[in-house]
Image (cartoon, rainbow, N blue to C red; front, side, top):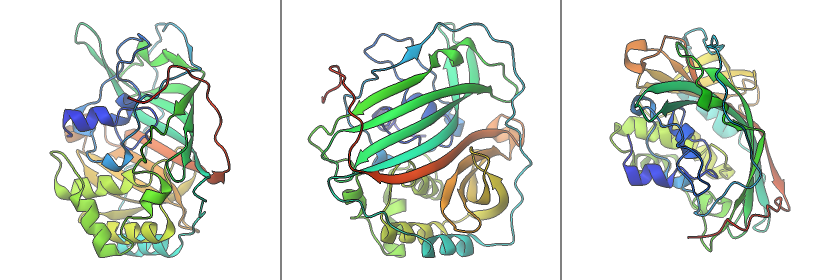
Length: 342
């Protein structure tokens, strides 16, 4: 569990959805100046700590949003129940070693933008004024443009998809508040974010030093190994780590205790790959690789201990897919007089 300052800093909407659980739900859902109602909150037992490298700039405001009043919806049966993962005979060192050897680099110029398209599904919790709790799985398609050197304004496009039911819970009316497409301007604010390509080039390219970096990052109340594994995912979501650092990251990840391999693991786009992950809070948190190219496909979270996770075994409580990573010369201009820097 993270401290409040770290949590609030990471709730800005331009950040990657870097938690494989409920934290991503509140990242874009804190109270904002637009006067929208309170947003869903995360459940502590599914939070992943860390992620300070993905702190967002201040002053991001939504500008093109289609919102409608929620309607009462009947309960739906969640499609998100999968076969419990079986640990493969393959080792994490073998799979992540292949991923390290397969890395390539887009090598963006300083004046260009890294463009990442993804699909996401995360848990959201809603607590109404009467302290009544409800849960659901919110889904989006996202495209983000990140300045390579961090000096230019970026952009974020979010397309809201039909929510899914959280296993055992009806979908609450609040789940339908956000619809359509939302555009956000990501102002540079005269500061370079940690996620800028030029800053990521400064990370260690030696596996042992990268491992030390992963363990040195803040991990809240989580055990060091859990914090280190979370940090691996934080560095892969909606960003682009240069090839030398990415290779070191994969090799360092293989040394984290408890990391194992599963096969026939599906991402949010329905692609089947090899999952490398570990269990935390009753949920197996996996990073998924293409079985042929060992390129990153996405992530998922599957309940493997229903008592600890408070959800049925096999429940798919998080699922993402990295659909495309490219380089653009420009980012879309988002005309929003309300956005600015603190």
